[in-house]
Amino acid sequence: MASNPLAERLCEPCEEDDKQIKARTLCYECHSLLCEPCSNYHKRLRGTKDHHLIELVQFLQKSTSTNDPSTSKPTSTSVNEDELASDFLETVTLTEDTVMYHGAQVAVESTSVTQKSEKRTTPKQPDPRRLKATKCQEFSVKRPEDKEKVWVTGVLCVSDKVVVVNKENYVLKLFDQNGTYLSSTELEDHTWGITFIRDSIFATCGFSNTVYLWTVRGQTIVSEDVSYHVDHSAHGIHYNGTYYCVLHRDYNAITILDRQGRQVRKIIMKEACGKKFEFGWDIHMDSDTNNIYVPCMNGYGVVCMTIEGKALWFTPLFGPRGITEIQGTLCVVEYSGPCLHQITKDGEYVRKLLEKKDLGWGPRYVCYGQDGRLYVSYDSCDKHVISVYTVT
Image 1 (tube, rainbow, N blue to C red):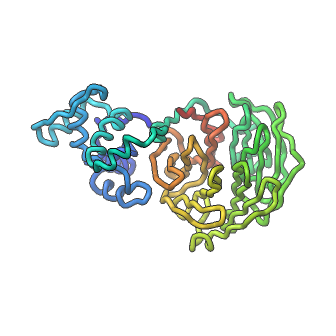
Image 2: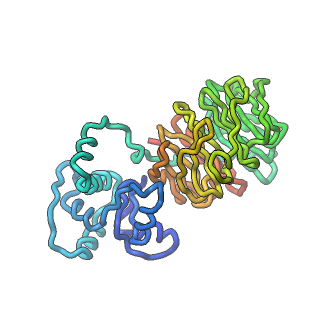
């Protein structure tokens, strides 16, 4: 997450709506400044209700003692809250390290002795809050012979190549990692989903009610002459090493195939969740648990269910589209926001990994590649590009 100057001591959600409201709290998990109404709303949302909201003045009292977390010792102050905030906010930057250290101090002080003991004995795991995505490249996916409208409906990193699904022009396009166009392979019908299989093999699905397998050979894409039938047209597909999980957006259903392409199960969302969701444009299936994660565009969130079709949890988001996994956490594209949300596989909201200023308008599909880079494609607009981010 990029550093936020505390000189901008206004509520961040309100600022996005062009409102000038003073921040009163700091969210330790999101690293966001919030006013009182936004703080109350933050605590009501399922994905953020367990976040630590720290009174800004309490945080500042911890932070003003020193800028070096390794030597800091909390000191008391006799100045009033406004003076403290004003003096501190003009001179200190709210860096990630500052929040993680001082915010953790404040948060831990409010926990019980039992909780502190548990935190000391739990093995340290990589903290997904510390992931950073930095834009490193952007390249055009439009060829001279393309129609004016280039609608990208999938992007995938296969070995050292990038495959782009171009629905309107009925082609799969192949680029190298520098964004240099290499070749195209014609398609017979609209294609929407793409997923990695193994080595240089990947699969696609679309309106033909068929899953196709392909191989990247050198600088071309060739058909594997292998296909699997599904009952309906598809808008998303993911292979987790054991099963193909195919999303039927128009029919509000999901088909599970085994690795030989035989149908294992069909999940009807209304039966699984008791309501109808309008799916986004992608799907993800966990390789360990076989749990299925589906962005719901107008259901306003991400739903998780078992392979048997039992709904487990729902995390509210405004209008998610694409989904990928990065180092054990789920990253979900918000199209209209726009941003890239990060949530855990248990449905806990973590934070925004990328925001509007990082992404621009209209992100739809996202892929975390074998090369450890993040690839984002865009909707049918003038921005016919793939944006690439390093993730550290």
